Image (cartoon, rainbow, N blue to C red; front, side, top):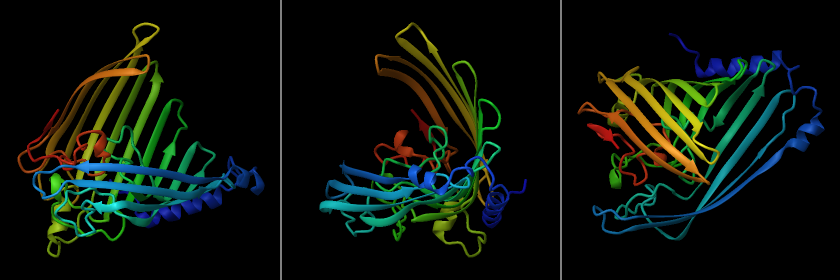
Length: 352
């Protein structure tokens, strides 16, 4: 199967915007688009502490983030959105941000920075499809495989071309081509081989030639069905000249195909039940030197009453002794990543 390149995607969305400039939002005058615009003002203070026996000191990180930007209304079916992150440390930064040289402390990956977060152009077509080009968030499903890592002060974004189609009733299809993955550490972060607490050191971005596809169907009462395919390619094109970091990254070149079903039902007027089943299969892809055949399995059941939910679940990420089921683009803190111990799946997998 052959996919479009990043440059081709950019030309395609530009051509569509030009040829279809008489689309759904074109009748709105510029004054209406200005009236629908809004400023992005998002302020967040955050405290995190990490106690790691392998480091001499306990880490304590207090940070403040100001996310400031602007989102225009639609004019001629086009919308522009951008925002910047300004992150300050408070109280001396007694933690290893991976860029402040404090290696005696555990890692808290919230360095002080000024960085572009989003810069995206969206085109809303007449045929129930939105095209987005530029630096953008990409939260797919519950973000188990592709997400924005909103836990951290600077989120994970993607230099990408994406399209979302809703032309078929109750069905949403999303496609994205990922040209670059912008990591939560922000720009100019060094690349250590391993950081404290089991977290793997990350470059400030990953060059990518990856494809993300996701389909959600809501046509059955109480049932949500999802199917997805993630074809991830981060490897250096030439292994003869590849660095150790690039070779390690090549192990993340994977093809993952899976499906998920969520069934929500009423036990009575006040109690809601939910059952979830999910399965995915992962193989090596692109330049990955390893032969992979790994599975992801999830089963959950929950009950909700008066705003409270109790849940029981079992999750498996398989490993083959050389590498574990890879989820390098996930919002990991929502799953196995709370203590920064399993940001990379162990070689023998995880069961929880």
